[in-house]
Length: 271
Image 1: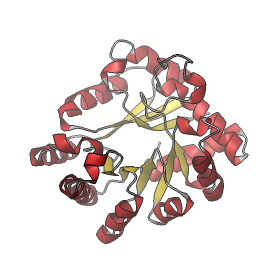
Image 2 (image 1 turned 90 degrees about the vertical axis):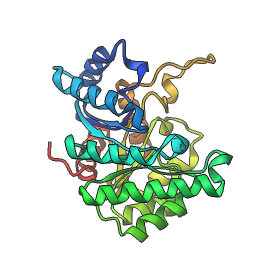
Image 3 (image 1 turned 45 degrees about the vertical axis):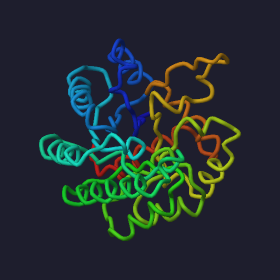
Image 4 (image 1 turned 135 degrees about the vertical axis):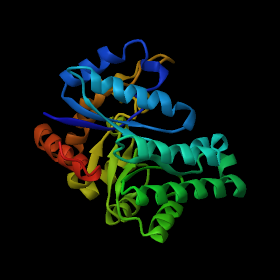
């Protein structure tokens, strides 16, 4: 089966010493493609380098590039970083802009000044995505209403993926209506993630894609019972598929085929 890891941070230092080995393992378990996601400008060079490295190796997943400025790191972003983002979009074959959005998980990010800055950066990156006709990869935490309001105000038409979805059924449906697929991580392997299971069952497989968000969001079955968890890598994507198949009541192969097509649609790709 073909699997598409639609959200990875496979460029980060956690993977520097064994990236090629892990990529080959991922390919062997069916991961044929992955997206490398940007989050801060200072790592854009490493992001691009890893993307080029993966696509130069044999027997590894096809890599796609999605640079963006993540809302959680809003204090680190400067206007010059938006200019650099546009340069990357101009110079490289990018599949999407991401990850971008709004995040009020931390109390400090609810402060008017910082939240206003998040909104400004989100708006500007949506404008860049529109200019370059790219889908976007959304990061939304505790800010679904505000994110939806900005998407609607901008009349954003290129869709994309609501990554690591943490909202409810109505919020998922609202995003689907705007042309987005809903990104499901290893959290689906947790029986206690009742809200996520409810969302998945309510909206159905045709609106879903899967992701590892590595090195974060380790599937429950891959975590140790000590304080230290194992690294999450693209190799773990089949565990996300397996749990999702159980939740939606579909055979794994049927679901894998649907998710692959959904990924191509969300990212406007032909494979």
